[in-house]
Amino acid sequence: MKSIVKRLVFTAAAMAVVASAAQARDLTVVGWGGATQAAHREAYFKPFMKATGKKIIEDSWNGEMAKVRGMVETGKITWDVIQVEAPEVFQGCEEGLFEPLPWGKKLDKSKMVDGAAAECGAGVLIWSTILAYDADKIKDGPKNWADFWNVKKWPGKRGMRRGAKMVLEIALIADGVPVKDVYKVLSTKEGVDRAFRKLDELKPHILWWKAGAEPQQRLAAGDVAMTMAYNAWIYKVNKKEKRNFKIVWDGNQYSMDYWVVVKGSPNKKTALDFIDFTLDPKRQGVFFNRISYGWTVKGTEKYVKPEMLPHLPTAKGHLDNALQTDVEFWLDHGEELEKRFQAWVAK
Image 1 (cartoon, helix red, strand yellow):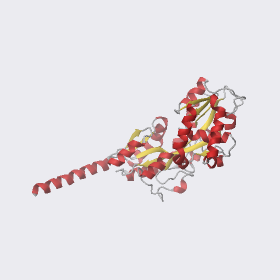
Image 2 (cartoon, helix red, strand yellow):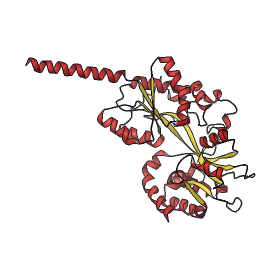
Image 3 (spheres, one colour):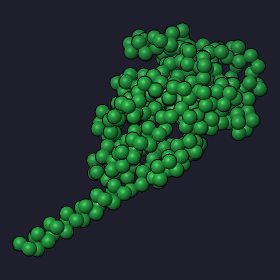
Image 4 (cartoon, one colour):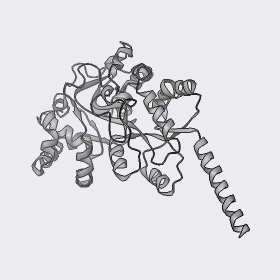
């Protein structure tokens, strides 16, 4: 009996040590790496560590949700805060992979831009898919997605992302569907058929891309006359390589990345403190002066340098005729539309 008691006491003590060690683990924040994470480091990570005395361990990922599921299912949580794209924040919340955020006085919804306060996520940044062209080669450039289809006036290949999402929306906008009606039209069989008919017109002139670095590489090489691309990549190439790639903001599609807290994180309180720390306009200003994404906290524009403002999706006028990607639509219809799209591309 004494040996059993001893074992129970020892086991309880061991579990307490493990729990204590888990609690003592440094906050691990996971992002996409590269320039975005470098900007996070200066705007958020270093100031947070200085202000709180708590250490942040950085990690990066490629969006593979299986790893997060594995952590939650086994209870071996090694990540605390993750930067995720919009579909993942909604899907992960529904699956119970992320902690619901306690929006209230501390995490204040009222200071967030539209769509930035989700049940399990707090907006990190806004990014846009835009039309880009080389202004050194095209003086009187395209003004909208309808112009993108005009291969007679602007001969040459068109770069497009090889995926249904964003491409089908662009096709409908190019075909004259008002931005506000795009998803209403795309929700019907007739609307989907219409998008594919419009794509049929351009198909012989399309060069498909997958990775975000490709569009500007093809523009630089002259492989395409114009391309759909991610705004921050275009800005980066213009700045680094002194290119004159122009962005057409009319009809751009924008989406958001979010901070989430992994369900069961032993550092939940610190994780929430960190997220709240990033939702400050001055700190966001530091971030958006370094990289050309859009802010998620109202009032941030006051802290962005005038020379940087025109390059951000949230600058005045850039969202006037923009389309916010409908996450729920793509969660509901993505699989069937992607299957049809890839079969169409392969024809």
